[in-house]
Image (cartoon, rainbow, N blue to C red):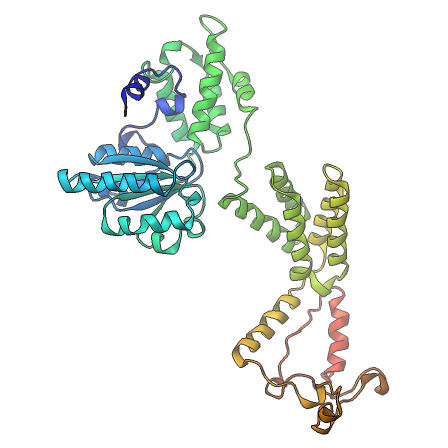
Length: 439
């Protein structure tokens, strides 16, 4: 910290309330008792000064950065913050160099806090790996995304993973009341009265995000204070402050995949109401409509298939219509398609067919094509027996009964097993006749 940063640290006027009210001890962290409660694994590690490298994973506003700072303070370790967005490998090497010197000269450990570690590319993660392995730094990475997807396996294998849960209304109330009472770091000096209902509205409306809760409180409290002495912060003021909020959804993070999963499973479960709800959740959160249309194109074959061949046609038509219409008119085609897919009869026989066939290809390798199925464009090939014994179905009424087309080693395989759902029931009946399986 240089002279200017030191001066700025003492001037809290321009610092957001959420930053001013950051917890300074483990005891001030609320809502994470499963991780930091009495006798819990991370709490014991801090108390014993044996904190391992770890990745802390959780939604925004659950205390990831605060946790790293508190651990550094309580273990007397040096704290080095590093942004995966703003800095690169050269800056990382400088931090590691300083950490090595601190460890060698003073026996002091360095906690390297990397915010948004999921934004680290492979080269950055590889550069960090040996220093974590040797203990030069204790890595604390913070991410809103599932570390299984966001952090490479080599680095993740050397770290514990701790998950922070969204804060419930009760712990958020504690934070809000603490901010209202604190005259130095909080809003106590404003002298604003806050109704109990208003605090409950903030705690509920923040959706588990402490930063959002404190931001809303700060905005609403300053507005109430501007009205003069004796001002009261009520539910109406809170609702106005919350109005600018956004949905809890990160279209590149885990919640994105959770909502996509809910969307697909609702269609698969034939629930059109849930399907259209989850579709609109994604669209309202800013997801790309073309991504949703692609998912519906896949679904039409993967989960419906020949139970209703029109499903794929409608999905293709909805995709084309949307690209012609754009938003918002394209929503009509998307919604029509979503509802149709949800109520259509279901079959995953196409999925089962290609996965089974692929497995046989992988298990048996490139089996030879039977001679009768080989083309014979030259005289020599005809002399070698290419095409011998081939029966032309059109000369036998459209079907060469009893004929086989698989390699000899796979003669008894059945990849396509139609269901009795929708149109596929008719296909199943015809296929039984073709296979000679009718009772």
